[in-house]
Length: 218
Image 1: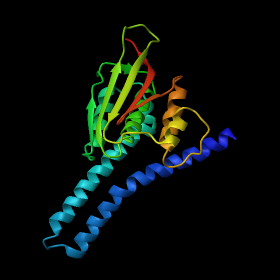
Image 2: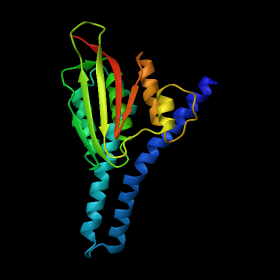
Image 3: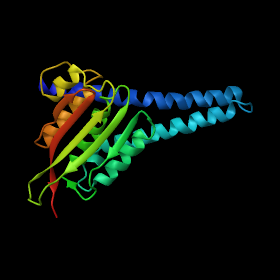
């Protein structure tokens, strides 16, 4: 039964990622059609601009997904600077979300830790239906081996919230999986693999995510 759920969840996650790419890729196609239909007239600059902007958005998502969902994101040498750059590029195409990355570059997380962080960034941003500010911080007190870094994400904006189904999945409660909560399920799975769990705190127009992630100490 668990294996069946894992397989169904994986298929749903892949479908979700494809859906996320439909919009920018579709816009590129629309721009090409405009060039074919109206090339050489006043609409040509608009079509070229649409293609360029949509191509930039699609490329940013693909680069982010490579780290957030692929083996590249599990590498122990994936640092927070790379995570910050990938996140900034992703949200650079979405003016509704202002990313404030305050995590220190020198903190090194265990293999898979940075990948979990990237996914939490997307999860937190998903709690801003009308846009807002997303602050990412990482605290790593002391240099004791085996200690965890406190990763905190705070998403603040009008109407900030997480849906009931998303909360249920993060908290490990039995709940049907769908496109709305499959990403939350993936975050919870990544956290479990690392021997930790994501904690959620909700306030007026604010969503906070906290998780302790093991770190590497030189």
